[in-house]
Image (cartoon, rainbow, N blue to C red; front, top):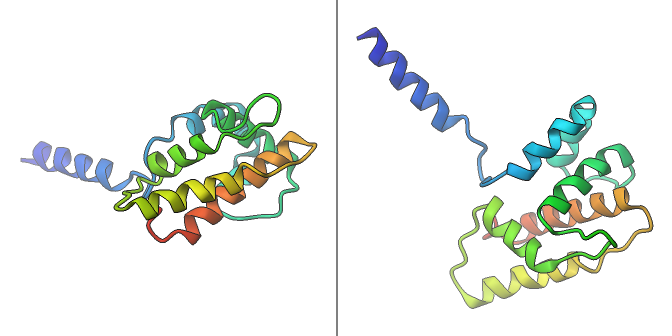
Length: 140
């Protein structure tokens, strides 16, 4: 009986310990391996809209955005992949053409961002994605 209770508890813990409102985070997890020395900074940046000035954290976001094909090698930003990010990671359910268009328009706004420094550009993109998730009530 003890083993059965332990098994049930372990299964419940596994289910409830998954990130809330986040789907597939494979690229983010892969990139973390290379930036463990600044993990504290990254965890703050990941969950907040911040000033885009921490180049060390920006390097992490370059990694994740490139793996998700949101940011290209020449600084180009792919709005279609920002759209996919909102749908996959935030597990967004689109219930109308209007909602889909709002997400696509927000992604196009993020794609207009520019900066000469890639780490700063990556932070700006991250902020734009978070702002979009907050502004669009059906995202997340």
